[in-house]
Structure formats: structure tokens, C-alpha cells
Length: 494
Image (cartoon, rainbow, N blue to C red; front, side, top):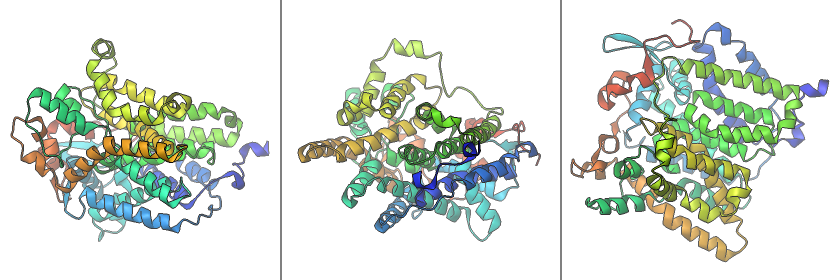
């Protein structure tokens, strides 16, 4: 009976230093949330989580790739620079990032703010902002911008290191990291083709945010983000999901209880991203279902799933609906041509690179099935499709990178590399120039052009936005998405 409560032997575990750090990186916001936001009824989860985490304190696996840390630091610095920290100019979603972070940093917890003469509770999945805000409260001389920059830097660093550590060969590791960051759909080609067919003027070759091409040209509120765009535009959701996918790909070296914990921790970071990763996690549970006979694994699973349920109950309080439209599916299935074109542009490269692995590898099959189904589910915004697709897309990107590097001949490797460069790099280079140019190419377009919309053309200048300033700029229609007058369930009294 004693063995049922024991964690797996340390000799079977591949806990590198970056794996340990990623766990605490993901865990910190959940612990802060339980300690300072929720009512006392949820507090028993805190010692349970910390106690279970003790079982994963295995000796760190020794690795000799010190240069991987250096490459990861350089990559993280580059992404911080692209995001806009050095220029003080950030893309559209950063109005929200700064507003939520600043309200968390400036107000008592739980957060209450005055908006339009009424008092509102902050109700949002603010995992990425909690630890930086906590640091600002502990050390008031640290600005929220500096704290957030540091936290994102650590996330970028750990993500890069996990990608590099998948390969023993330095050259292959660098190629894998480059492909992961440069991967995208053939959005640029679709944008130019459809604009030409509609008689719209041509756009600059670089500096255009073309990932909304389906909405602008086909009227479909769907979008699959490139890896670079997701890391810059929505780092609060992409970083944790990408980390989870990389840990899943190490599933044979990591205990089931640990993987279940990391999945559950996504709840406070990205509910939609968690939903998108759910089929992958479900397959993991099924494939390792015999391990559920362990009492330790059952306790860990129950604890962390309960924690994610607590977060879900909090987020569901007075939450606006319409993000998903199930009833729309039959109508959309009767008009599949535009959806087929979207899937061809966004997923075609995966079929060319992975070929038979698409249906032979269960993880690839689950991911591609998810990505083919998601466009038919979009609601009144593209948020659900964009965020739920993060995990499946990244998994296929990593699998495609493996397929390239494991190709049996140099000729095959070269052919795949050329294919990836031709189809991926133009869109990612376009997005890179868009971020570095702060959307200036969009502001030069005539007002009637779909690409001149504010969400693409307007950047946040500085980091001192409040909730009211954010809503004044982006629109008060977003108020119910972030704030509620009704006290969220399980939230402690202010």
C-alpha cells in the first residue's frame, strides 16, 4: 500500500533545471490567486499543492549545453525588443495588458475599480500579470513595466531553452528554434491574392499585419496566429500553452501527475488555450491510464483539477457569451468553400511536411482534427479560434521541425527547408516588420482599406494605461469581458 503513495523513482525522471523553473513559473499565479483573491473555502488547496510539488523536487538532470542558455537569453532579449519595450510602442492588445497589470498593481486585492460612475470587480484570466503585480506591491520602487518585462523575459527564456534541449546537436537545435519562431501560414500570399481579386490596391511588401486576411477578405471572423505574432501579441496566453506542449512532448520522461498539474495551471492563464489543449491532455490520460491506479497520481489529479475548477467558477461569474457558436455549424458546413481555402492556407504546409505522420502519430492527428474543426465554431469574435488553436498549431510546428531534422537524406532535408522558408518566412518577416515599424504601414493606407482598421494601425505608447483609458481607446463594448458589477463566485470580500 505504501508504494501507491510514492512518486516515481528519481532515476526515471528527466527534471532539468528549465523543467523545474517552468513548473514554478506556471504555478506562481495560481498560488497568488488562491492566497489573495479567493475565499477561505479554497485555502486547503494551497498546502495540498505545495505538498504535492515537494514530490517533484528530484535531483536536477545534468546537461552540458551551457551555450543553450546563452542562445535562450539572446532569443528572449530579441523577443522583448520586438514586443516594443525599448521603443515604448506596443501592438493593440497591449492597451489591455497594461491596463489589467496597472489595476492589479495599484489597487487592493480583489480589485475594485470605478468605471462610468459604478463600481466593478476585475474578472479576468490574469495569470501573466499576477506575479509582476505582486513584485510591484512588495517592492514599490520597481515599476509595473519593469516587472512585466522581467516576467515575460523569463517565459521567453524558458520556452527557448525547452525547444533547444530537444536536440543534442547544436546546429539542429538552433535550426529548430528558428523554425519554431518563424513558422506561419501562407497568410501573405492569401492577402495579396484576395486583395487583387477584389480590386484593392497592393500593399507594401513588408510591415503589414496580414493574419486577419480571412476576416478582411472573406468575412470570416477566424484567425490562426503565427508563432511570432502569438508570442508578441498575446504572450500572456501563448507562453504557457507552448510550454505545456513542450512538456507533453517529454511525456515519457515526466510523471503523469506533473503533466496533469501543468495542464490544470493553464486555467488562470488562458481558458481558451486550455480548452484547445484538452483533447491532447485527454489522450495523454488515456494512454497512461494504468498510472491512475497510483493513489499519489489520483490525489495530484484531483487537487489540480479542483484548482482549475475554482478558477473556472470565478471566471464564469457574469461572463458574456457568444465566443462559440455551436448552432452555426450546420449552416457553415453547407458553405464550405471559404473555410476550405482558409484551412488550405493555414494548414497546407503541415500536410506537405508531415505527410503520413499526420494520421500515424496520435498527437498530430488530434491536433489537425482540432484545427480543421475550430473555424466552424467561431462566435461573435475570433478570440476562441485564435486562442484554442495555440496548442495544436505549436505541437504540429514542433513535429514538423522534427520531420525536417530527421529526414533520411540531405536532399529531403533541403527540400523541406526550402518549402518552409518559401511558405513561412514571408508572413513572419512581414509581422516582424509590422511590430518594429509600430504599424506605420497600416496608417498610410486610405481609410476605406480594411487594413487601415484601428486594431492594426494604432499602437500603445507607454505603459501607464488605466482600465478607463483602455476602454476609452478600445471601446466600452469590452467592459463585460474584463469587469463585472456582480461579485465573482468564490472571490473573497474586499
